Amino acid sequence: MVNRPIISYIRRAAALSMVMTAIVLTAGQGMTAEVPARKYIVRPGDTLWDICGREYGDCTVWPRILSANPGLADPHLIVPGRTIVLPTLSGVVTVPATAPVLQEPVAPSAAPAERGPFTVRLLFTNNSNGKLVFCNCPNDPFGGLAERVAFIREYRAANDNVLLVDSGGYLGLSPAKEKARMVMTLMGQMGYDAVGVGDQELFNSLKTYLDISSGSSDMLVNAVILDSSGAPVFAPYRIVTVNGIKLALVGIASENDTFRFFPDDKRDFRVADLDSILARLLPELQETADAVVLLSQLGANGDRAFAERTGGIDLIVGGHSQTLIEKAERVNGAMIVQAGKGGGRVGEVVMTFGDDHRLEGMTYRLYEIDIERYPIPGDILTMIE
Image 1 (cartoon, rainbow, N blue to C red):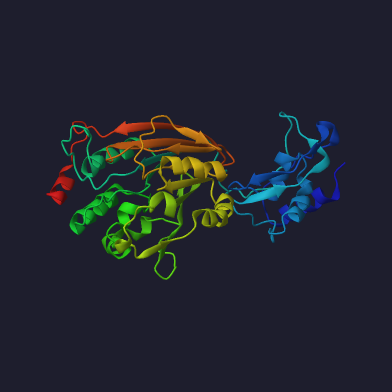
Image 2: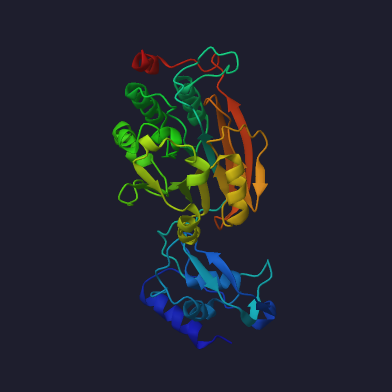
């Protein structure tokens, strides 16, 4: 027996001249059950009709989802990436794997939703310490920023869906402005998506750093640095979309972990309370992004402590302590990584997401910038000579 909501729907679809094939489910096609409440991330091409068919086995219960989500003003306009609540329903039909589900009519031109798994390759660096080129140092056999350009170009040529970030500590403590500007130029050449700000960057004052980095402001992130009047200086985060996946890249530091020994005569800035800032930001980011990545200047111990007391973080790219973390650590659900000192290593975190854009797994490795394999490219050599 066909019920009135389905008849109404078929008539509406026909009036819109949409092509459809409807298969009406009967109670005998599945088993009645109680489906518990849960959250659902809207996929490209989703409608409430097909979500109900897929999740409850009954397309006609879509008004129940609408009533459970007051923010959905129009049931026909649900934005991909948005999290909605699927309410508890009793007595719905759960459809066997072989049973067809009644689908809402889709115009012939509608593109099918992309399916996972989705992969993002996140490359990271930390604490380059202003090293432009190989220094021929006995305790540092790896290349500098100039040699790193060759590695990044080779990696990008061989891989898709690459994201490049730095947690901070790239300028070193030199007062030489031209050297600092060259560091920023080389990072721009490599196409960094987001770059953190720490004590090295502000060592010669915030005013000096803003002058040096004036052409790179779009990639700078830090949630806690304030100017002398108490106003935020940098964007707290960037949301970057790679392979359809939205990642929130947040720059963090703290007074105790990052600036404890900072010279007072260079301090023309303030540092906001990190825990208060993140308590406000994280719920917003968890709603908007598929994964939250912190670019940290807390040091390894600070990262561990912060992850322990703060949930909802997926990845912490560390820095400041210049710790070589060869095997990724896990604290309270967050992966913690760091690539040592001198910028001679590049870390790689391969992130895998499922159909619903939920993070399913991460792998970690370190690459060494071998100067024989990665000589300075000719155009970069011309720039730095």
